[in-house]
Image (tube, rainbow, N blue to C red; front, side, top):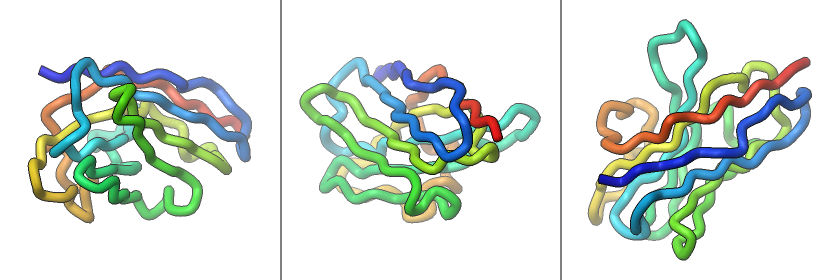
Length: 131
């Protein structure tokens, strides 16, 4: 079973940047949709932030993240990243990395609507953006 460890979350001012990292416990370089989700306390649903399909590194983003966030991966290090720029107070949340086994199928374009399909999750890293 794949396990993940996130890091990089901290408190920053609005307009700042952070890079989150997610290290996988085993090889995840083929056939996975790797994604970042976030959840605000009190809200029942996790929001899709960004995803990358390891088949050809196609990326997907939630609407409010496009142009500000970038997902990437380093297959040698079994690590994927979320670069977050121009952070806003509404980006404050716990950020989770997750993986779905997809085989030859790319991630769903609306990957955020398929939270329950993701089999493997990290424990989360807190991002707090102050105004």
